[in-house]
Length: 81
Length: 468
Image (tube, rainbow over all chains, first blue to last red; front, side):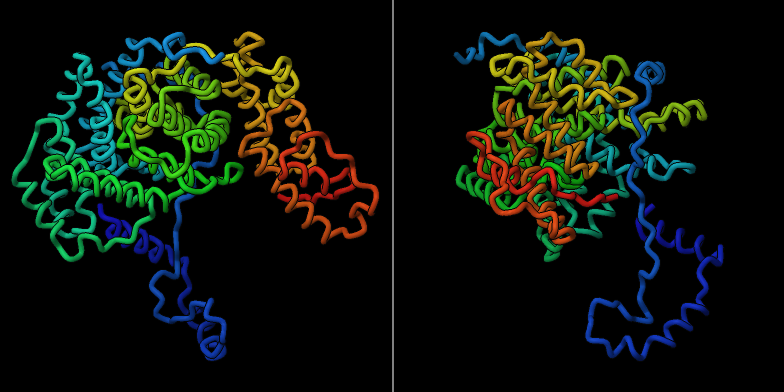
């Protein structure tokens, strides 16, 4: 599956959960928009058509230790079969 | 007197061959089970693997193993895996990717190129590849220096490159050396805070610059300097039981020379022991509970998806170590051991639970070998204290390291710089705690400049901030 297909699947799932309140987002944009669009600070990405306004990042391995080596050795028999 | 290379007992060639063959056997299973469709884990997306990854990584293993092909057992496996790999390396899906993305032409074609080197050409694929490389967009992707080096290395092993005139190969070599000077190989690594990505950049840059073999390539910095940083990173990876990165860092030794430091020799021994006990070189990604929850093909796919990469890394290390004169020593050299140094450092490190594998191996060493590995202990202790933001302990550790003559390493001078910065920062928070004029502690003899400054400015009254 390509990255764009995966991306579409994820976005579709998020939308189906209705976790994103687009009405509320729109309200905030309309309240703050005029002032922000005139701001000097160009660090604020104010754009009502921003594509990536939700980013889902994979969290790195949370630091589990390596499993017991003896237990892994049992599993490693799969490599012999 | 430095022992002659011929007097050092080297790791048995037969064992290195055995381990390389084991990696190739796992490669055979990996291609069989993961190359067709990758692996999708419904419960743990982090364990999922796209097919392109094992295809490309198997090609890298095959390329590195070619140097040991004069051993019949290696040669037989090389060709078996190559024949398995061929249909996947040139699949319709891969060719479509190639046609759509000329800027990724060499990435998509690596396996095809390696197969060509092994005697399995494909003229039709070559034609498509040539078309892609002639496209306007063929150089249109922005890449980090180590990824540029990857492109240049792949370029250098293509069939066209191999038949090029010597002057063209010389130009290619010069381009690689120039790109290496833009990479992390040409500036001091942050040995205390380097991320995995930083370490991968280091290890991969070195692999591509050397072409996976001991060569006459001009490295951006001297071998001594690069290995000092590799050793600092290796110490941390051993302590973290990150055998993927530890193995890649170990490549730094046989890819750049024939001598191994005591730390590197010990690290190889640890990896070998762990591999023998587990049946493969493991990573934390392989969870017993996940294995037990699966049966049949699903279980094998999960195991391969989580284990193949590090198994390949061990194969790469052994292939590099099989170069003439490049095998690691079987014992730790005690030539530079400072008597009693290990006994002073070990109490700082043996409170970990569970006990890391390196420590289990370390406790089996005789006292002189243990003392010879004091730099390893010191590196690990420095990293732990820095990671924990325990600056007071770091300060004490540097003082101890100085008395043991261990501070001539990057981790020590970087830790000293860290202390200087934290002291400056602490003094802005608590200006009343700054040392009064005339009450400076007396510096010890022969401090390196950086260490001297740090220890001078950091006193018992320095209130280091408590950081998360």
